[in-house]
Each structure stands twice: as structure tokens, then as C-alpha cells.
View 1 (cartoon, one colour):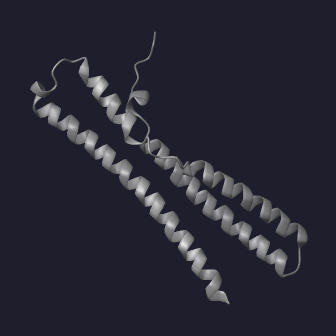
View 2 (view 1 turned 90 degrees about the vertical axis):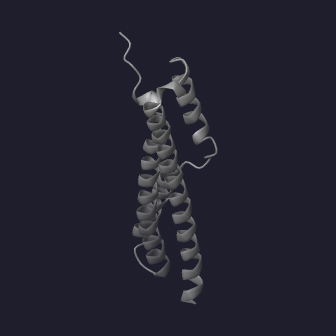
Length: 140
């Protein structure tokens, strides 16, 4: 009976790990492509052409990099954490019985997993943020 509970849990964890790893690898590759592009331009400035084209090229690279991503891991993690907190409260309210213990420990698992997913989601959001927003000149 226990094996039937462990197999779906392992499949969920493997799928989650694959999704997070895929997004992190794509963010890292995007970063490496940008750095390689800028190093190539630094070594051979004749490739640049006019100076007005460089911001347009960099913004187009940033705009097309993560247009495919539809899953917001930070929001998913926060929702899972919220569900876990609700289940913790319900399990604590019931106080006794197998159902109460299952609900309580399920809530603990949801909170822990939700916090990890939310943390990865926020890391992914910071890593995929466009550099033009971060380094924008101040208006005065």
C-alpha cells in the first residue's frame, strides 16, 4: 500500500525538479549568450555599425528570450504554501484521528514544498529580468 503513495510523490518531485532545472538552465544560457555577444562586440567594434542599433539589438534579445514561459513558479509556490497553511490549521483543529494527522502532515509538506518552489520562482524572476530595466538611467 505504501508503494502506491510513494510512486506518485516521486513522479511529482521529478517533474518539478525537471521544470525548475529547465528554467534555470535556460536563464543561464540566455545570460551566457548575452555575455558572449557583448564580448564579441568588445573585441571587434566594427561589427556594431551605428551606436543606435546596440540598444535595439539588446532589447530584442531580452524580449524574445523568455516569451515561451507561461508558468509562474513564484505564484505557484505561494499558492501551495497558502493551501498548506490552511491544511495545517484544519489538521490542528481536528486534533485527533488518522485523518487529522494526515491533513496536518500534508499541510507541513505543502508549506515546505511551496516555500522551495516560491524561492526558485523568485530566483528565476530575478535571473530573467531584463537588464534595461535594472540599468535604466535616472530621469532628472
